[in-house]
Image (cartoon, rainbow, N blue to C red; front, side):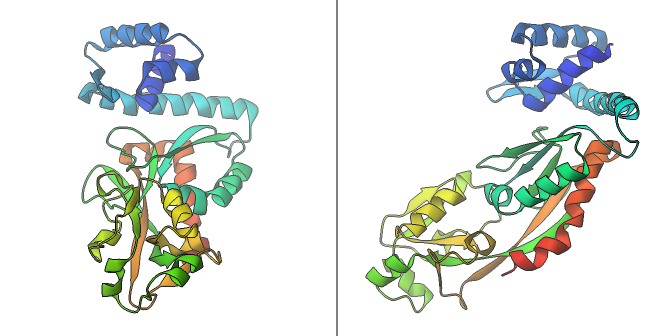
Length: 295
């Protein structure tokens, strides 16, 4: 078993497609496939299975992943000793999170993280569905859905608030809203339930059955744009709305939701220096963001 083959294995495990692994390694996809086949012969077992979503790790592949990441971390630490101060870290850490968190919270954090660790590279994975650690889609995931069990380290980051919002132009041209039942005669905007970024998010259709056709989107920013243009009423994170005059709270004292952001990673990654650096950094931001997100 050679380290060079393990590099190909790690990239395919992270990207799940031969084409993307080849792009990141700057080789042809046939080269990646050939290296994986050679590694499987050395291991004596299949490391991946092909599915409609890409290459999935087998049990032997998941076990090898832990070993390969430890080897990778060792090589990176050796490089750091040659080219950077001993306390620095380098390499790639993949962070998965929701769209709102990626735009509303992380930008300042990532800029500061890069100042602290200039040799570190962060791949930010933002999808209109949960990013899954079980499928090795990321090293660290910031999520609203707290897993009940699994081989994960998990800690609470902070709570945040969601409320009903509409544009001033919408409220001026539609019937007044003084109670929850009044919503049934209004245009509603929300997530597509089966394609939302988390199971624990409140859905406006659960509050009231509207008599008007609704607009659904997998994107929170599409929903915000629709609301701002006068297209309807939506449940939005208050920290994203902020002081924007394009939005007005609706039934503010009656309708308010609180949800929690959690950060989690596989337990086997806690000894990987670059992952641990990002993990500890995210935890240290808790105090800074907690008051702002609970407006």
